[in-house]
Length: 586
Image (cartoon, rainbow, N blue to C red; front, side, top):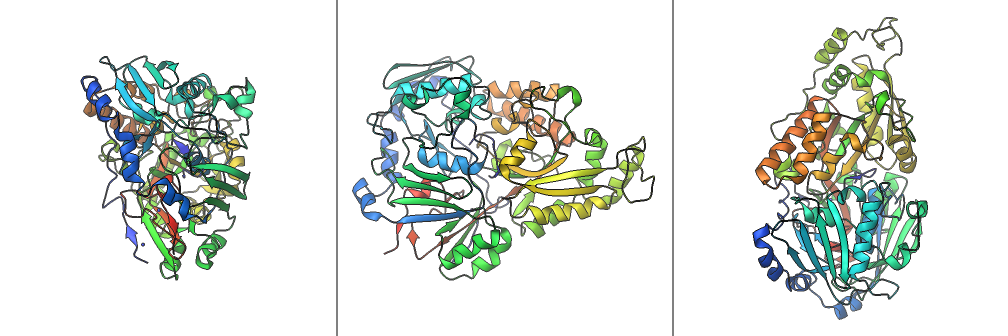
């Protein structure tokens, strides 16, 4: 997905699979076709899209119909909306992946495979991409899906600046046209190095439904009926309760073997774990790592732990918005002024024992980070950077030298002018099960350097409103999940995203912005990597985030359904890759 908040972030055997990032990195996505390879790409992709589908889904459609059963999946969160243009939370994107189709699919090895596209042709100048859409694809209401729906979707995303994640994908799209029902032509303003990643999460929408909407009605559309063309179709949705999907047995590529999938939201992590042990659900995601020992020994339960398909970053977010950058329409910008001082953020970085937080709150199943680009992203990760050393003495020295003193003896420092004690509001979404323990640890650490935290959990929707672009907080615990390409997460720290709701720190650095624009169109992979590394160093030196990179942990019942994909390079059991191939245990 685009850089999507796991505001999920995000946001995965009786044998335990430990595909730790330190041991096995995620394979890199396939590079886009070079201009001179255009004709070869057209020939190679003229028919293999269907051939790939046959090898991926081993059983034919009639076997799928013979499978049956209702799969119940437990999780901690719920979609914030069913509108792909305005959705923020990962639970929404999990639903989109099942209900909608896209031009490409992201495979579990990190590569891209044509999905709706039957043929792909790239012009010699690298600016014109021509896609031939497969025949016979239908919307869930029976209407045919055509190239005009595809062009409509891309043009809609391009026109809607209030679509925080979909709009940036179209930044270099000069025009999108559908000259006939099977052909989509995208003309770029200039060649880009990552066309597949720009299309893989733009969910194709039915023009005969969305085209009736105008103005604000587009962003406000609740999309409750959620007509798509994907392997599952919407039956019923109740926010914070459940999402009920039925199998689309007529799907052109991956007709599910099961009949239904029901995602159930559990507000209590203990209840979530109990649900899998008692058989109330067949799989759980977003599980607390503290449950690993219990589930490892539970009867008929299989644990899967590995590298997430979508790189998963847990971040401690500093609100460093400057008054002059406060969004005029939506901004509250109530951040503590001390957080605008790099000295304070640097001191807090040295006062944070990330490894201890990982060991205690995440049961060791994460690695300390240096920014938003995760270590599982291979060459894009700047391996020359190292997390700030945990050194409370150094942290205290930095604050002392910067003039932050405890003048009244209450163990809390004040601003250099003697006012405004360093009391920071610490917020997190209540569907991050490890967050309360993390907040407790962080509070104890920062108290050793004269900083007090005022912790509070929020409903994810409420926290989204407080976060961005309101900037009505001091520090947050949240996270990101992202594309395999670094562009989406790099975009989060650009100045232009401050008013859109994508920026959560309010960070603004003209040098960073310039490098972002350069890497977005740099076709030489080595040169682009160097730019991406330089951007990471800038953000790291400015102490915009404290981060660590998580593993995915999920659990399945072994006595209910078989065929879950637990042995791939990445893990995402709520994805079509598993939910279209599992079948009841006989």
